[in-house]
Image (cartoon, rainbow, N blue to C red; front, side):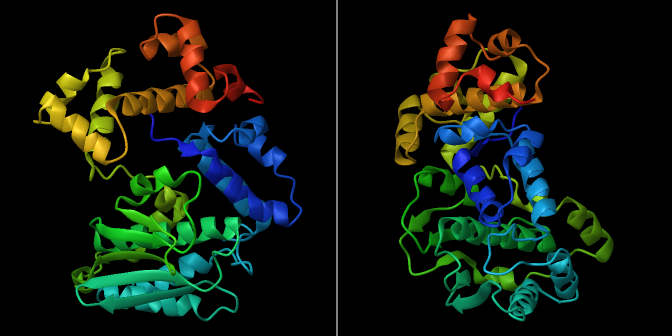
Length: 335
């Protein structure tokens, strides 16, 4: 089933560095299968494959690992060299300290820190990197990449206790808990991710051969959205996605509650506490599957509608416009 789609806010953000340097981004969008007109609607979304393709195109166009978003460019190969430098460390704490020291060697590079406060370890991005909207996106990418790189190094996902951001909540603030897999807060003094300090003693389990394979897929693999299953909403979404693979008919709330071994009332209450609802999750699963089918460009729209459980095209068109602010056909423009 389709992976969770990506908000157009992140598409706009990743383009800003190139735009700031005078690069025409319209051809890059079109080559990635993203109709430029979609950027005008806040509800629009793209597939992870489209976003990764755009990321690669921007990487080539800017010649910068930070895609023109930082105060100074990061030459291609810098991240790989940092990874090779940390691979010789005995444990994760040593690797993180060596990695943050590595980036500290570069003028105008990101100011990364690792601190411990009692039982907690805190990875932070300091300084004025998050002063502009485009730099906020770079800051968030750095946190995500470092968290997932550290998890990869020790061979286990490191649960985040919380994440904080040194700026006000953006319009797409509801995306962040699922993106980081933990509670989030905005308006903090700095941007940071917090985890149990005991992970710092975890041994590294990767070698150079594994690192070479990982780097061939990076940073796109490290940035890809993870379904952590840490919330009831994520568990419901996973169950609905699995059901949609087998049949256009999605299970009811009662059926889903039974599968999760809880009462319907408890499921409604837990979802409400997480700021969502069963209907919103059903819509999200269908929306992401529809966008993925449209982006691939081969399946007729009528067949996509039937596969997603819509009895007629018109009801699918109305639902899709409500989800994304655009028509299904607009997602195929320029392909």
